[in-house]
Length: 262
Image: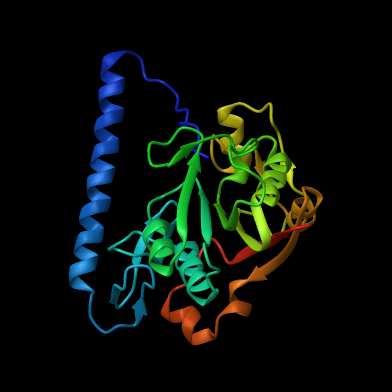
C-alpha cells in the first residue's frame, strides 16, 4: 500500500518550506544526473546485467539510503529484489488465463508480467499508479482471483499485518503463489512492533517514520499464523553463484517468502 508521507520536523514560516523543497529537488536532480552518467560511462564490459531492462555494464549504480555500491540499475532503477523477482517469474510456468496482483506498484512489474502472458492488476490504498484503490486488509476482489501475488516492502507499514497476510492467502488460486519481501533483522529473534509510537520514535526504532515494526527471525512463523503456507527461500539457494553475481543480487534484501494458500 502507499506508504504514509514521511513526517519531518517543521521549520517555521515560508522560508523553511522553501528550503525543504529546494533541498529535495537538488537531491533528486543529483541522483538523476549520477545515474545518467553511470549508465553512459560504465555501459561496457558486461560484468553485470539487469534482467528487467537488459542494461549491462561494469557495475550498477549505488543506492543512497543506505549508501551501497553496485545496487541500482541506472536505466530502470531496479534493485536486487526487482531483479530476483524477474528471474523467478521468467522461470515459472504461466497457467492459461494467468493473473498477477501487484501490491503497491512501482512501475517495473507490469511490462514483464504482460510480456509473459499474465493479466497484471495492481492495488494500492491511494497511489495514482494503481489500477484499483483498496485496503490490503480488505481487498476488493473475489477469493481465488490470482495466480501470483507480489507484495514487496509493504507489510512493515500495515498495523494489522496478519489480516493482510490472510487477504493475500484468500486471493490465491489453487497452485498459486505469493512472493513477499520485508525488511527484517536476522540478529533479532522476535518481531518488535509499536502501533502507538510517533514518527520520531518509529524513525529511531524501525528506521522509517512510517514503519510500525521490525521483523525478526520469527517472521516465517508469523506469516504462517496469518493463513499462509510459507517457505523462506534465500536467493543464494535459488540461483547459482555466477547468476547471483551477474545480476547483483547481494543487497539489503536477500530472500523471498514464497507462500501458498492453506
